[in-house]
Every structure is written in C-alpha cells, then in structure tokens.
Image 1: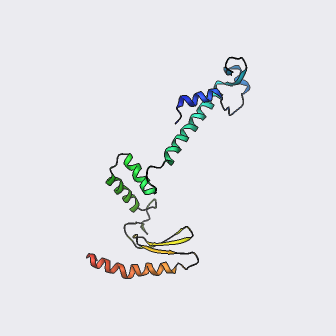
Image 2: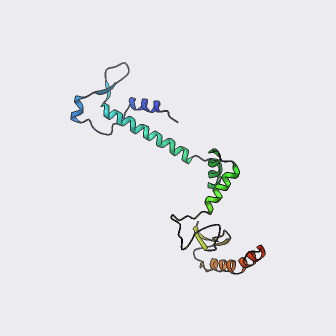
Image 3: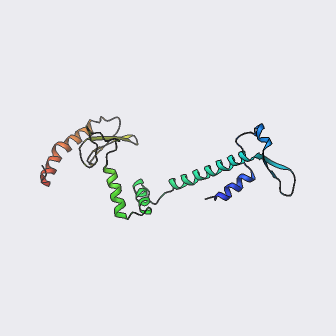
Length: 180
C-alpha cells in the first residue's frame, strides 16, 4: 500500500493537471518544478491546480486500497467461507458467525416484506426454479433439492417431483414429528 506522503511526492514530481490555467489565476501564486541541478522548468501550475491534482491522486489511491481489501480472498474458496472468515476477523467466534449467516439466510429477501405472500427459507414449500450453467435447478423453498433439467426438457419434471414432495412426503414427515 502506498502511503499518502509517497502519493503526494509522486504528484509533485509530475502532476496530472486536469484543467488549463485560467487568466485570472496568473496574477496569483505559481508553483514550478525545475530539473535537478538545472534551470529548465519541467512543469508549472497554480496552487489550486496543484491542490486538485494532489486531491485526485489521493482519492484514486484510497479507492485502489478499498478495492484491494474488498476483493482480497478472506480464506475459503466459497462465498460462505469468505463471509465466515470476515465475520471471524471482525470479532465473532466461529459458532456466532455461522449462526448469524444462517439467520441472514432465513430472512425474507424482499424489502419491505410482502405481507400477502411472505417469503422465508425457514418455512413454506414453493417450487423454486433457478437457471444455472445451461440447466434448470429445481428445489423446494424448504431446501429440498428436486434435481436439474436441461432447457430442452419441460419444467413439468421438476413440478411433478415438487408435487410428490408436498403431497406425499410432507404429510408423513409432519405425522412422524408429532406436528399437525
């Protein structure tokens, strides 16, 4: 990471002036750079032009530093592992970080929440069809995977599996749990 001092020194060696000198600025202070050991002027700028060049360079450097932190892999190969690593580096222990991520996954994804058709991943049994890598992935809203089909195959295949899941598997699961 480049320090602010290094960035300012780089700008003073060769500033990138964004605008031309205005006529009324010629009556004010000018900054010039001469070649080492010589009298030849490398560049000249007004104080406001130089301040703008330094400010722009510092902002660019801060953006690069921020992007570098945001894109840096925090450990794992999956997004879930990276999020857990970031939470742990922020002070969460492993169990608390996993619980927070699980709680966020169960929350509705619509803002504000739709009261007529509530969306939750913790409950409900809607058919979810997602497109991924040239095939459709089917699952139930409760998390049960129903399979994949190619786009040339009718989605009815997934609908039949979902219907079997909601009509035959769920009643036996709720009966064995003692739920009504």
